[in-house]
Amino acid sequence: MGHRKLTPGKLVVASHNKGKVREIVDLLRPFGFEVVSASDLGLPEPEETGLTFEENAALKAVAAANASGLPSLADDSGFCVAALNGDPGIYSARWAGPDKDFAMAMRTIEEKLRSIKAETPEQRRGSFVAVLCLAWPDGHQELFRGEVEGEVVWPPRGTQGFGYDPIFQPDGHDRTFGEMPSEDKHGWSIDTPALSHRARAFQLFAKTCLEG
Image (cartoon, rainbow, N blue to C red):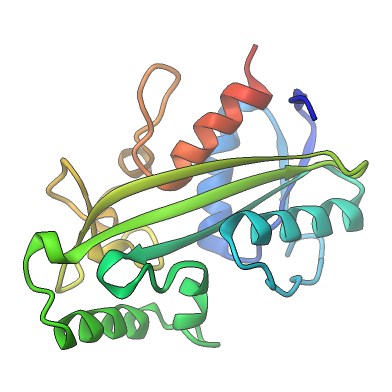
């Protein structure tokens, strides 16, 4: 299946996560789309039964495209800690519980790292992964994956971003994602490599489906 260009118009961001929607809207802004979220349209959240980021991104994008009759862009992302065998991974949101208590989720990660005496930077490696899926109502879909490596730090630092951002310091930087404004966290422009996992996935999506 070949790549398909997406022309400006109405586009659904298939998420009910306000922080995630805000970041994707920021990334889409230069391209002239009329963006609506799944929650704006009152679309139900599909159950994320996939075993990979790719499967869950596709589930969300396809459900929104089918329900809305519009091209839909979904993200599935997570925080992966090497010493914890990649956990929480695809279950990153679930670790925060029904109340989306990411302070609790971050404490859980720290407690697990301390329990195995992971104290040095080498023992506290982590990464963020994001997969974007663009789905059309006719069934066509495309996937784009972005990853960023770094260190799990404690205590949390910064109040910007969302989720696990305050405990992740990307390689080559002295600030956590929680300490970076959106434009620094994404670090992406037409001629600048992306920094965040979501921006890296978005850069691939933009070059494939939006530019040229």
